[in-house]
Structures are given as C-alpha cells and as structure tokens.
Image 1 (cartoon, rainbow, N blue to C red):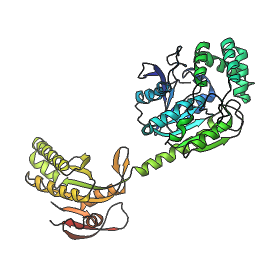
Image 2: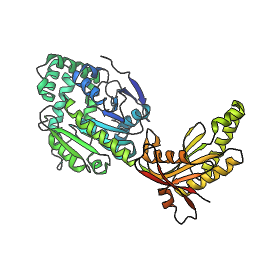
Image 3: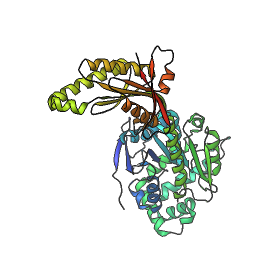
Image 4: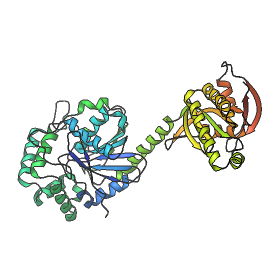
Length: 447
C-alpha cells in the first residue's frame, strides 16, 4: 500500500497541521476527520483506504489531522484553542496545497469546523458534506441530542484510565461499528490508530473541547450547497442531530442511510458525493458563460512577407505588430486571450468597442506596411480550462477567416446590437461557417 507523502501547513498562530494529497481529479475536496485520526496510520484501515481512493476518483482529496491530533502538533495545553484558531487549520491546508476553493467533507465533530469555515469564507467553499455530524457537544433545551454531563464524565474517566487498552478498544468498536466488532484484525488496527492519534491527556483535552463546542448559530448563515448524511440507528450521534442540521442549514439536502454504524464503511456514500460534485461543476460551467464580443485578427500574406524580409527583419516587424495591437486593445478596453503567430484573439464587453478597436488596428498597422483581416461576433463565451471558449468563440474565428484584406467583418448579431451607434455596414452575403450549423449573414464595416 502506497501512503501519500505527509506535508505540513502552518497556521497563523504557528501550529503545524499535517496533510496529504490524494488524486488529481477535477476540483478539490478537504476531508476534515473524526476525533481520532493519524493520516499515516489511517491507511492501515482498509475501510479508510477504500473510501479515500474512491473519493479521489472524483476530486483532488486533501487529508488532514486537526491540531492536537495525529501527525499534527500535539499539546492542547490548559487553554483550548478558539474555534477561529481551529478553523484556520482548514485554511492553512488549502493554502499550502494551492487550493483556492474546495468542497469540505466533515465527519462527526469535524463538522464543527466545516460549518463555521463555510460561513466565514463562502468564497472558498464550493460545497459542504457532513456525515454522522454533531454541531453541539452538550444537550440543550432545543437540542436534546447532545451528550449530558452524566454521559461525558464517565467517558472522560474511561479515557483517563484505559485509553488504547484491549478492553477499551473492544467496547469502543462494539459501540461505533457493531458489524465489525467480531473482527480481531479491525480491533487491532483501531487500537493502534487510537494510540497514534492521541495520548490519554491529548484525548481528554480534545474531548473536553468538543463538549464545550456549539456552532448551531452558524448553520443559518451557510451559503454553500450542503449534503447532510446520517445513519438511522447511529449509536454515537443520534440521527436527530442530522435532521436538525439539515433543517437549520438553508437549502440543505438530507440523506438518511440504514444501519447502526457510526462511521465505517463509507464507500456507499461516494456515489452521492460524486453526484453533488459533478452537478456543481456543471453549474459552475453554466455560470461561467458570459455574453461577450470576440475579435480575431491575423496578418494577410504573412508567409510571403516573412520570406521576403528574412527571419530577423520579420521577427522585428512582428514585435512591432504585437505592440501595436496590444496598445489598441488597451485603448479600447479589450482583453487579450491568446496570440498565435501573427494572429490575436481578444474579448470585449461591448461590440462597438470591438469594431472601433479593429478599425484602429487596421489603420495603425497600415502605417507599418502590414495588412490584416478582422472578424467580430457577439455571443455566449464559456470559460474552459481558464480560457475563453465555446461556440461564440468558434463563430468569431470563422468570421475572421472570411474577411478580406483590411476588412472588418461582423456577424448579423453584432450589426443588430450596434444599431444607433453611427457605424455603417455593407451586406457581405450568407456564408457557411465550418463546424457551425446553418448559414450566417455577414456584414463588412463600411466606415
């Protein structure tokens, strides 16, 4: 089994947070773990390895150990870190991994970091997924599913006296994962994982912090699409908590799964996660479509001219061409998208500026002894791999190839949009545009 390299991110308060990167799928997903994790020892657990590998088929997965746990800096100290400080663990990992935006997947108390992070940094969170989650450590009048002090106190005592022992692990596995309680191999791995995740003192400090954490007030402010998953008969965190979370998070989807296991196995939720991530990518692609005017230019007879001048002189002339075109783009507020040889592709937020820019380029390059052709079209432009693309761009390029020497050719759409601008046009007839359905009527700019 290949264990990913463990790296360290540093928070603003100087804590080193261990993280790993698995896969290179589209988009990022940060897995914010349950209470006792060690990102290196976790891989010894087949259920964990299978789940992470499954997620990595649909996203680049960032794994982490929260502060005070596992491979991250230990020692909570007498004063537990603030919620703001703990949230920064997520931010530090995302920054270190070069992730600007990511989906967050929080298990159990990991959700208590995910919700406030999503509410505080909505621009960095594409989606929120929680499983077996809790958002308040202690029971309240309007939250009867938290633990009472009568439940917390014996738990603390058990940690203090028996943490990581065979008896402790046996009881814990029977409670958390009843279906795996009879598997000695599973119990052995869990025991080793607990001891590598935390010492008894660290475990006590961590769970006392969980007892006193309450992020219910944050739920109504979460803007990210949220998927809440909970098992019907979860014996650790009552399903009422999942229902409460979904009901108080705007637009959240609640998925109830059968069974009484608190965590493992989790492979069954991968299709739901994959579906959510896929729908968000499709939604983002749709939102990234904008109405824009595209302009394509290229030098007429460039090959012959280059042969006449020779490499050095042609290169110098081409540099002056590029400088001139860029100056005109700047003047008319165009955005250079691409340059290929002697051609330019630019976008504008209005067709009049695109046409005026094309005319200015024709005139300025004429003084250098260069003749170009130019084509304009206004349509929906999509962002594909960080660049403008889509049918609107294809149409603009095809229009450009049909333009004659020193001619600015435009589509019917452009002509109609600039009515009243004072620009004059001559009918250039109907044309077939390669790879574009139907015939298109084009116009040459006459003034």
